Length: 191
Image 1: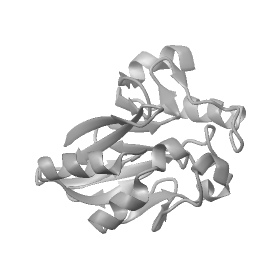
Image 2: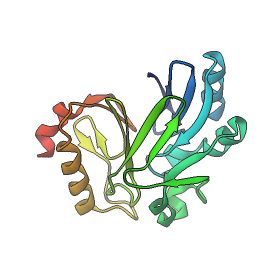
Image 3: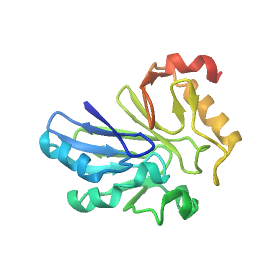
Image 4: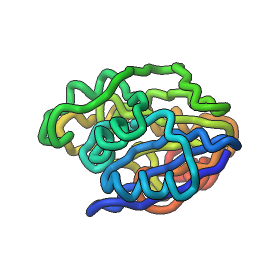
């Protein structure tokens, strides 16, 4: 698995291009700048085969439609994101497929497993692939996503963070904003 990180848009959202050895690629949270994402994929000869969303906030979905149309690929998200107010998503969310707890999405030779982690939004998820957890805005280095937005829940966030803290492996955590971390490093403040 090869991971390329692009930090995009006004809110500096991390977009991840996750590829297998043949270059078959999942784009996780294309928050903006579709031309930058598509140019990077073309430059590295990557085949975008799917878009996976950790949640539906505007800063994570801004480039979804443009990339999906250019790559002719499916867009996966959790159905509970459909409850988000359009002001938080910058209009209706574009998607082709819905996943839920325990769903797996195959992209080339990679398998992404969905962990429901509501709190920041009702349908927030983390995506696990091998020893990496793409945490969206659920878990950051030293913190978590805001829970004062419409659709957020502090109680759900506490439960989601506790769930992540109890994953036995020390996974690499790639969040929706800021730098990477590990589960081991974050367990201390979560528990």
